[in-house]
Image (cartoon, rainbow, N blue to C red; front, side):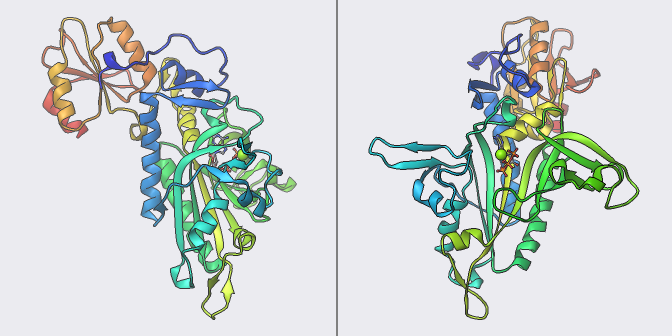
Length: 406
Ligand code: ATP
Ligand code: MG
């Protein structure tokens, strides 16, 4: 992609109405644009990042047998009444049509997916199964001041699993937890698995995946020696100091952002919608369900919170909008390099604008593409390569560049 043709420009100043680093940098760099509090438009480069994260999540969900679907966002009131959430769930957006019919906007999709799946399950032999989607969610959040970390409209992966019994659910729960750790690792993050309360209607413990960041809205206690981690919300008094798991480590308090979580839903939805299957002994039973969320747009914000410096963003390679930011300086042309790299399938963002070196480098630092490749009269046929995280440069020829990035 040519930078000269991109209709979005970078900005030297931070938006005045943003408080967090992720919102400031993503807006300045032209990745996103705020439409109103908690609602963002994704611009060409921002969409590329969102799609990269989405694809990592998709691959890991497919790898554990998840089947991707796309469910409706506009829901009839009746399904929310069935689960007792209509006029009750504080974050549910409820609206009325001109004929007086009432709807909800999807904030989670148990109400849709449970009947959708169980209609097609007749016996235990059809189980287990897991369906997921990657789609927008709407929530009437009270505060939305954290940029992409808390939207009123946000992008989420939500998966739902169906099992013949608790034991089979527990087996799959463990598999999903491992897949989640892989997702966050591939996105360049270290997530801590935190025990938390089960939420609105579950007595059970749920697990949250937390990334340490000052911009987060959760407080956790974690052990400095073993992997024990707990949300302060449910930490017991005696756990405030010494680790209850290993007995050796000390607990440290930190601010974190929840990038994903997994829930044991038990038989609630089977019961609410009267969905049964024929079990092994011939009796009709409710399925045991699990649900599993990953905040994809929140992840994008958290990555920026974790990887930035005074000049801009430092994207991990796996989620960067492009692999290489190619720049030509006055008196040289990178056209043949751009053509060749593109032909080889390498993702290149080419700054072909008529601008000063200073301006181009400042933009490159702000945008945060991992590798900067400069063609200038000084370097001749060689290309000067530099990583965004380092001050060191190296000279490489086109062939070497292609080899390195394909
Ligand atoms: P939180 O405690 O942060 O409000 P939640 O417990 O309501 O999160 P879930 O309903 O389980 O979250 O949603 C699954 C995932 O979606 C969360 O782990 C988080 O990453 C993301 N998420 C939830 N609410 C938002 C939001 N308002 N904006 C962006 N991402 C969100
Ligand atoms: Mg919430």
